[in-house]
Length: 462
Ligand SMILES: *Cc1c(COP(=O)(O)O)cnc(C)c1O
Image (cartoon, rainbow, N blue to C red):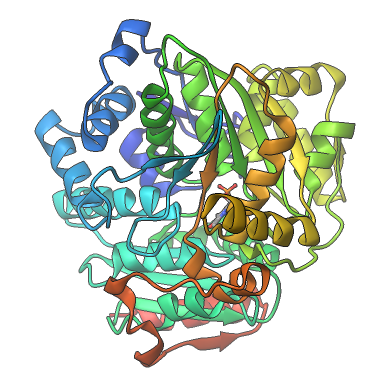
């Protein structure tokens, strides 16, 4: 499989190259040249298979020229072994026709482990094979960073630098990033918002001299391999509820649009998905764009679902690429307009987006009320992100089509918000019960590109 950029002006790469590169050199995001389709028979045959087996069958057509079957099966097995649930992504029923896909049984208790654990094993395999070394730099609103650190800590051929917005991540998220003691782990607390962290990472990738000097590699949600890993649980959950013989819909708590875009790929691969519902918190740029066609960032308002506090949703560019009939020049034009303040999606493209995506928003009071209601009525303790999803799903679901809401984090990752809303303190799973006793290590940094590049160069000069 070959990979092309959403902006149509970067080298065509193999899976392995696209994975190690992250952002394309024209500023775009990589996508497969074509999307492989699974027949109804192929999908029906997934029933009763392990998560790992489904992962192999769904992802293989995208990566098959990079690994042998045996190598890829080994990578998948090592990636998901540290999960705390045999099903990896268990489905629980909330109400008649409404299901919750629990994606929080990985090592850092958020769905990002699904992608990051796989990427850690993919990188380790590829770098060992080529005898090379990379420097991973990522921005996080909380969950990506801890998942990346967990996936890469202690690897010989990788340094990992994670920028998070100082004071704007939960204590559990922060501790998951600052307590690993391995030398190759560098947690950086930046004075700014998540969008600032994300912008500085983009700047570093666009500084080709720096990028080549330190061997920069990205594992943010723009990395194609991450999107691909997330396609798998759309298949396992839909098949568990009767696909391919029955349609299902999904509601996805959305920030950077990576998770829901994986659902869009699953749909294009042939999985019978009816609706993909984008659920946003009060930072609702995606909901506004899908409602009005205007994509205009207007500043982040911190919320109790911080991993969705985003105004520039990077993976949305991939959806735009398909909505604009794979016209890279049109996407590049929109992204130029975005730099100048915002853009308006054409009527044709908006219609194309609405053929797959619906959207809704959930404010802070509604989020708390949903946590309270789910605990009292269903005995289900939701994290605030998952609660945003459940609220929007309740508004949008239609009788006859099962709705699956993605539960993106464990409630114990956001204990203050969950306890305030439900009166119940969510305990950490046994395997991380000593998190609050471990000592922390973090470097405070300014929102300044030059200073960041200097620091990274110094720390990687082995
Ligand atoms: C990252 C994250 C999201 C948003 O996912 P995107 O792929 O960025 O849309 C939602 N919930 C939690 C808990 C997250 O960590």
